[in-house]
Image 1: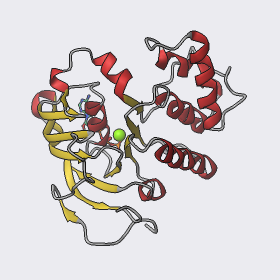
Image 2: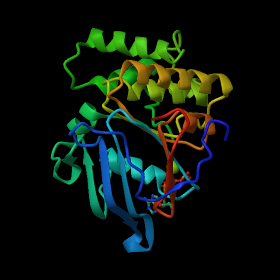
Image 3: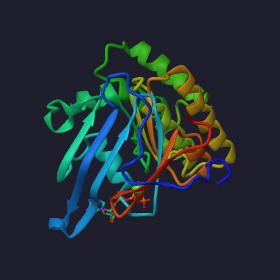
Image 4: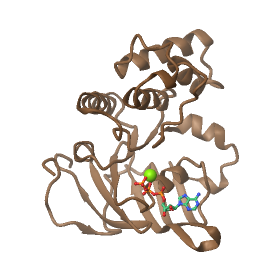
Length: 251
Ligand SMILES: Nc1ncnc2c1ncn2[C@@H]1O[C@H](COP(=O)(O)OP(=O)(O)OP(=O)(O)O)[C@@H](O)[C@H]1O
Ligand SMILES: [Mg+2]
C-alpha cells in the first residue's frame, strides 16, 4: 500500500471531511440500514458517513460488505430500510422526481457497467443527456469529446458487444460524466482494466479534480493505486464503517 499513509486508523464515526464553509456536505448518511428478505439479510447495518463538497472518498472492504448497496442508495436507485441520506442537504426520502435528481446531480459508473447493447458507444453516452437543454448535435459532439477523453476516439460506432471489458468500462465512465455531475459515484471503475487503462482513468480523475474542484467523488475500489488518489479511505465491514483515514498527500 505504497500510496497510503500507515498512520493508525481512526475509529468509525470520527472521520471528518474538510471544512464546508457553512454549506451542507455533499453526502451525509446517518445510521442507514438496508434489509433484504424480510430482514434476514442486512446489506447495510447502521452506516454513517459524510463526504465533503469536492472531496474524493475511496470506499473499500470485503465482498458483500455493502459497497454497491451504499452507492445505489446515494444514487436513489433504491431506498434505505431506515436512516437518512442527504445529498447537498436535501433529504432523498423527500425527493419526488428521482430521474431528474439523478440526471442533475449524479454520475454513476456501475460495477457491471450496464451499457445498452443495442446502441453504439457514442449513443450510450448521448442517452444520458436526453432531457437536458442540449441539442442533438451538442449531445453528439459532447459524447465524442468524452470518448476521446477516455482514449476511445475512433470506436464511437461500436456496440458494447464489440468492445473489450476495459473499453466498455471506459465508455461507462464517459457516460457518467456526460452531465457534469456534482457527485461522481463509481463502483470498481478500474475493476476490469489493464495497467495502461488504469493509468488513463487515474489521469482522467486527476484532470477532473483539477478542472472541477467542486465535484465530489465516491469510488468503490480494491485497487490501492485508485484508493491512494483519494483524500480519504473508508473501510466497510458488515454493512457499516469499520474505520477511515486520510490518504497521503491530503490536508
Ligand atoms: N437484491 C438483493 N437481495 C438480497 N440480498 C442482496 C441483494 N443485493 C445485495 N444483497 C446482499 O447484500 C450484501 C451486500 O451486497 P453488495 O452488493 O452491496 O456488496 P459489495 O460490498 O458491493 O460486494 P462486492 O465487492 O462483491 O461487489 C451481500 O450479502 C449481498 O448478497
Ligand atoms: Mg459491489
